[in-house]
Length: 472
Image (cartoon, rainbow, N blue to C red; front, side):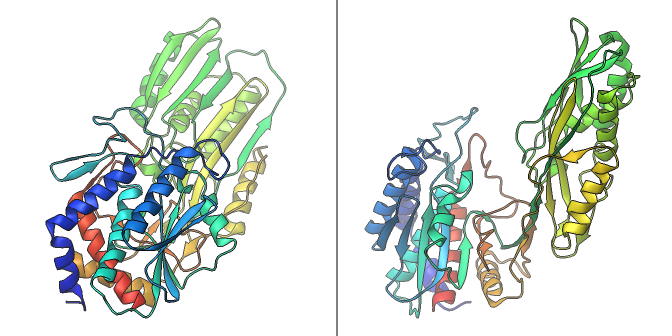
């Protein structure tokens, strides 16, 4: 048993304390805090500003000294000693979308599970960390240093809030963000997502492709695509469509058009950080087009080049010549996210998440060489961002892992490497730490976002122990 563990467990096992926790989460979730147009003193709109105000009121009520930093972030101090720990959480949320069984901003608890937009991302975890700070304060645990909660308002749309804050404030020795997974995320892969394409003279040969489009966001595996093929009937394409559907798992719908056939392709969306979980509708469509007897012209050459460089199912960049992996951070992943084509050219964009071993030579330059060999040029920003890596053997990471293991009973927990990015990606030595437990499904960014109350309570205990260990 860790020092103070018995007191921390007893504090949060109190049903009254758990009801306070749930009420505080619901209070913040009730504020719709989706980014809007900036207003004076509200850099990300009225919703995030109101949520920040409400969160700071809660912090005041819990007994913490607070400050609003120009509407970008709010801070709450555990005590008046020097600050050694920053805890980063955020009050903004993504839009509610459709498909909810409950009011996304009328949070409810059903069978021990909280539902509402923000209960898991990130208002619930923020409150869990605040209550952990309150626990340490109420128990009078001896501390040599302070912890500071930093409540942001722009995590979902670019993290300008944190950039504004750290432009004038120093980093802390330790920083964690309760906005991801347990046990600890210590590696976040780098990103590489250039725009590229080519042009050609318009042609009148038949059959040919005259228009193609697919994808809607760089960081999403495209679930839909479509193409117009002129000079060929739907009946003539049926056999090839069935064969490609069987090979790719995608669904093709053929519709007669005035000059030919419109082909609609349906795949499955997924986050670009985990492209194996989706079914890319653009690469599936390229597979079908590559096997059609298209006439020799610019659009046909572009389609065949794209199919060669981005074959369906190649989520590692093998064909592009950039596949690589290392033991710490895993493999490079690739998602062909966007593509449009017309009579005189095409443009496209992919999303690569690269491991520690990647560099400009074996990633960016290798990719550009593959493009150049097929007459494709990079047309937009093709720079590589940096990998975020905090040493798994650092005292900080080891302490967080020990706290997680102690309260979950998990033995020999290992830190995680992810393709996504968190609030700490640009913060030296930072890690993501909770609140999502292994195997949980918070339905983040989707309808019916949820989190079990028991998971929030467990997170409170883990966070309180971490604060006591790091600041003691």
